Image (cartoon, rainbow, N blue to C red; front, side, top):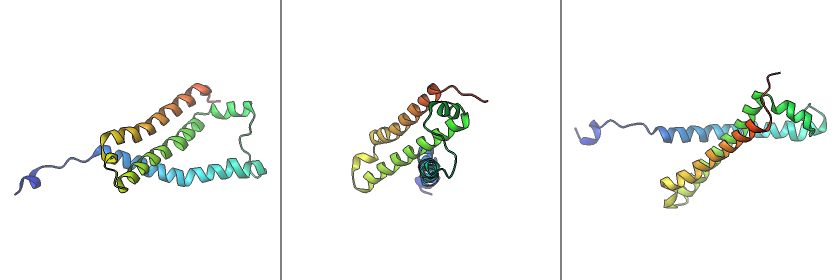
Length: 132
């Protein structure tokens, strides 16, 4: 037996995590964003479906719901992880050697984490959560 065959290979958990975030972001960007735009941006203004209008009282009532906050977090955060992963691997495919390094991972994935943290902060500080 060779040395490589006896050595147990550890799974790349970090790599799996970023690929999971990439896949979920792609699915959500492909499914939720068009539906959200269709309902809020097209059918709502046409009067076909009821949507959140531009009045402050309506926004406060809607943004107080924890499910709406979770929906907005998912709608914003996961596509950013998809974008970060896709852009990094685009640069890898274009032959940029720096895109494979740890600094590039910190820039791309750290940017997605930063956007997620800012989104969480804004969602938690704008309107208090109400269950009623």
